[in-house]
Length: 204
Image 1: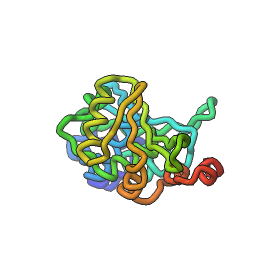
Image 2: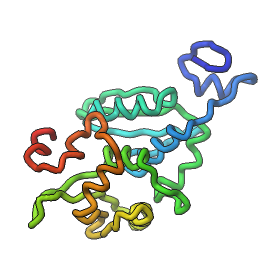
Image 3: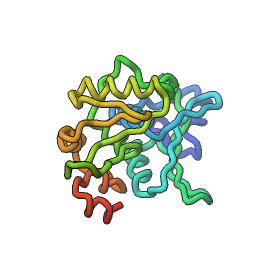
């Protein structure tokens, strides 16, 4: 349903691109933070004339939650034959500004709990082992530029990130402050908020 003319369309993006009276609806601040969180994690931009965002996961509940958070921008979640679910947004001109995030997030960006919560739900892991009972938060980033940018984002928020073998990790003493900063666990990713190893493995 177009909020400007009140007419239902199969493709709002196509309607807005062709209409002389209705314009593309602007993304809200919340939607922008969800997009940024996805691009820090598993999301990627694709384009014909306009950019759209895609994200894949084996966790249906996770992608349904992301879809709900994106609201009207999301086109829904589909299932393919490889036991993977896929989320796609509509094509939108506001997404084009994030092309540079495909390599690394903007150096002028300050990480928010909203974006970090999406990013962690998509791409973060907890690793157990060693002499401590507290697990470690780890992110994998194969590209040098993205690892450097991720370290900067986390350092700006006081999480003292470390790097090794194409991974960025937080010190174990920062695990609980990180999870508290993110807020409540997201649907489909509750195990990533569980610092007890036995419960973590049961939930996963």
